[in-house]
Image (cartoon, rainbow, N blue to C red; front, side, top):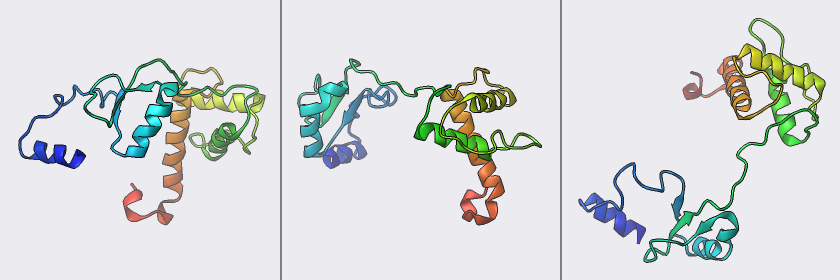
Length: 164
């Protein structure tokens, strides 16, 4: 069915919505062509906010109704522990300050006073709000800085296309 709709479009047929106006692009609806996925969403989707509330002739089409919210990023702060803390402390132990040492000597699995000070230093050096917590902006900057420094230090080991 999906292939037929695409062929119609390629032969000059209309789109279901104008480009840029589709709810698909806004992340509030999805098309699932596989029968088992459709069955699963019918059975379990409402728990996660995915329902069948329009386009009833399209068995594959589902909408997010906004009734369920998940935090996109839970900030890490003093007392936090676990895999995410280990992930970001490893980055702080890898990333060097400009012309200086790394922010941490080693990567602890618990977010304590030392990690908080390292995060504050990183935030200060990168023009972020200095609060000593790893929120979404600090996490994004840590990841980007890590990848930039990793590529710079290991360029000779990377494939030619990844060396930029």
